[in-house]
Amino acid sequence: SLLPSPRPHSFPPPAMDSLISLVGDGFVISAADASNARSVVVMKTDQDKIMHLDEHKLLSMAGEPGDAVYFTEYIQKNIHLYELKNGVVMSTHAVANYARGELAKSLRKRPYSVNLNLAGYDKKVGPSLYFMDYLGTMKKVDFTAQGYASFFVLSTLDRHWHKGMTESDAIALVKKCIDEVRLRFMINQSKFMIKIVDKDGIRVLETGC
Amino acid sequence: HPALPTSSLPPHPTMGESDYSFSLTTFSPSGKLVQIEYALNAVAAGATSLGIKAKNGIVLATEKRISSTLIDESTLHKISLITSNIGMVYSGMGPDSRVLVRKARKAAQAYYRIYKELMPVSQLVREVASVMQEFTQSGGVRPFGVSLLVCGLDDEGPHLYQVDPSGSYFAWKASAIGKNMVNAKTFLEKRYTEGMELEDAIHTAILTLKEGFEGQVTERNIEVGLVGEDRVFRALTPAEIKDYLGEVE
Image (cartoon, rainbow over the protein chains, first blue to last red):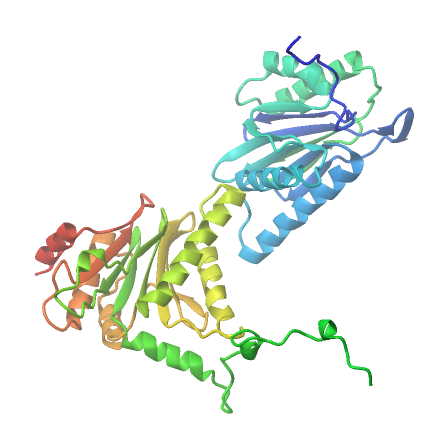
């Protein structure tokens, strides 16, 4: 009777967005569902939830739509400002820490209910992936998922991910994860957008997988 | 007219507030900012400092001008650590330099707090220079009476920058500031070689100081600081300086 009874987390409102990202051999692949739905209404099925911060960084967003776009645009513009001011490209690590710091700062003022996957490629470090949530949690990871999808695909990724996957293997694994979401998640998230970032920049692999 | 209630009148300025809300640094008819010229004079009267950038590091060296044998010179540090990989030395007014050292240290930590990465040397220099410029255009303040030599090794390689009281900054391969700067720079121009090693740079730095030194150079009346490829800036101990002085003889 000393422990509080567990109840579903009601703030922020549960997001329907699904994000899946994983690191491969010299690249990071990011997938995001493309539907924008509120309650029982599907408003859009071609929403791009993966923002390009610069030529070698992808920021995937999940959560409240207003906050998600506002916050990621804020990060994108500040990254751009830094690169203009200082004449150097920011490292993925610096971008991740900067974004996390902004989330943490706003947490006790006006919190942004947005969860992020930051995928980047740096010449010195190679590919890297960072998980961030609305509380200002941040962790460098090999693969991750956000939203309800995470309940289903983290185990798939645990089972099948290994270091140094080839691009074709990684795409196959991402599609396996998407299939799992389609099979097991109650909400229909028919279309997924898949992007990849490597030493040559960003490529959009699929817009409506 | 009915008298205005006193509460609606602007507060009477007390001495030292709005009395000096204008900039004390103003243009002369010839377009010069004489306060900055005079600040440079203060620098030129200060003890000589110099820096040399080698291919694998940078060395800073300075005269410790001790006015009396009674002074405990071991407590006097002109060379300051700003972050683990950035160091700084000044010529001119010591107290002014302390303000800038403090601001530089804070700027570096503020940067680290946001990005969890060491601040690039060029950006730190820009911050410090910006502070110095502010003091040439703000009310009630005077320019800093120091020139700084800032050195550091970051992802872009070794850097040596000079920052002047005006806030202008320059990157150098080797430079000297302070009383003997003209002779020292001439000496450095002759001695500097592209791609010299840090060890050679240390010897050259000490030799350059010796050139203009009044009296005997000892391990107690000069200071040497350096950063190598390990990216750790540190000041040499008197014992280490003594060894180098022995090598240079």
